[in-house]
Image (cartoon, rainbow, N blue to C red; front, top):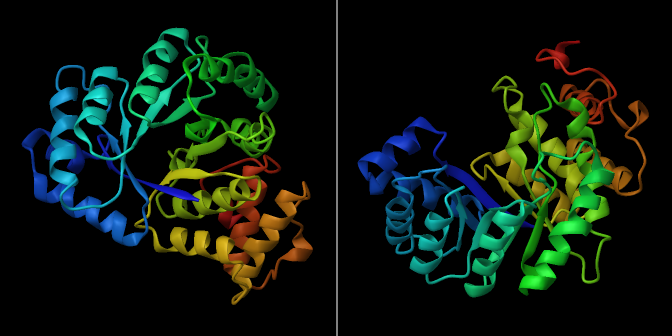
Length: 306
């Protein structure tokens, strides 16, 4: 799975200040730490940056290419900033992102072809996010895939994003993510790639339970063919979970439970209480989190204590 490091993100106050102050050392250290932890690509999220986007993206590439050997995902609503990054880099990167809006498609898909870049395509229409997995598939089939063919975006460069929303407040939307990814993978031959912004799921949740929510959802998404995730590689348990699934490491009870969750989700079966050692608090936490993500019990910040 392609691991895209999420930590160079303008929503972080420290990162935002580093952008403004041109603190190269801080950004470089953050980039190097993510790559050392296992990131295959780094997301450079500068936000809208309407006035400063071009300069900021060019600066980021100029300070990061000498210190890390991975490509970049250029993440902004500012198309000029994205193109500036694509021009500046010597590596084939990623555009994050286009939606199904015709104007955005007409801007981003030609850039992806021109620079031979990967392209994240959100299942997001001009009127907003479709209500369920079937509607997201319909949007992709009717708009995104035909546009990719029209503009000549190779299928291997197209990454469909079903859009991860928060389990706190939009729990019903979280529950359909697995179905959406499973269905996306069956839309074409060769199959389109899939990607998610994983940490969005746990936004607004207490900090102490966010990693558990993120890595449990990741196991479920990997089971249906997820190809890439924008995530925090500095979370050791997250990276351990990825290694557990990819190597099918059954060396601990928790890892065996994660693999059981993987296999059952892949087979469209539910994780059952009988699969869990209820005397093991970590296993119980995983089981409760699965119940939340599947919308079987109502989310509350204190759900692990219930």
